[in-house]
Length: 498
Image (cartoon, rainbow, N blue to C red):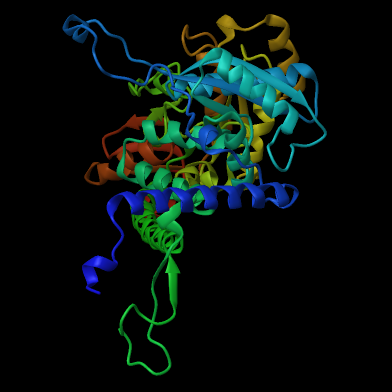
């Protein structure tokens, strides 16, 4: 018998293959019926797995060449979902409204929003299996392609909810990180956002198929290493990804620490010059940049969007009495701000921790300004700035309810109502800043020779000049200055008292 004669003919081979396939399918079906109650998670038939719903609005193919000039950007279509665990129904609705504003800032089109009343979020699907099925129906009705949850979901919750609704699921933290990534402009801002994103993604890495296969391991006990395939299991692809992310995070932290040194040098220079510093802190979109522009004429970007400012801006300003001080615009805060995001932006928020005075800006036209105040103070506490004096600036007075303004003024003893857009109350704020900023500790009167005119100039920039008179022998100066400059001025010719 030759080798060729032992091989089955093509027709017989196909028939035998069909019989084997039928037997395997029957065996799989029998096994499925026997172990239906012991399966890990919900399983689907091949037809169900293959029946992927087409997502409307993703195709970029043009039906007509004339659409090139006239077609509009197709926004991501999202449905919002929140869990109401505490507070009033109005509080839950306000939180979902803020989530809608975040989604719109990220470039999405909000189609619908639902809230479920629960004692705590469901550990499996965030809203419970029954409500997840209802959410899937809403997604189908609205043709949404994304579900945004008003909370930070665990990796398991994300996976299980996506399995039910069959579309992408995004939580509040990922949404905020996406906005930060869009608005970061400076090198340090981009590095901080990248670090926060990697911290968020590290526990949420998932792998399918080849991503879970083993890479080559080290050599066995009887091998010098590198033999055949090789011996011993190595790390999986997903473990490799995690290790690389950790390495990138370590590198990013080193880069941020180096960039932090430059800002620290600038702060030390300001401290040596004894220039008082004021930090503008507040909820996102409360009008901090508008107030900075109104006080200093800085021309900083002002946009009616959440987190329009990520990179700190420091500008020089002058009180009505002529004293110089610095005014720093900082990143806006938001309720439930992710802790790793606060940690990543800690070097930026040090402008608040190192300030002599905090201007806490709150949106007076917001439905719940008290919640904004509480959220910002929580972050101020996290960065260790609770001992710094604070002035509450209730902004947007031109659009606020007078009753709300009166309520805030009763609750906050050190509060002032202003409108950065119209200029209402800004002069009163400047006067209050002049009173509240720390003053030099030493008051003296000296006659400064004209050859030491630099000391007079320093008294104007670093201290507070009370009177100045030019005489034949020099400049008769009465001023409040810090101890270091006072010692240099005392070395000059005294005029009566020192």
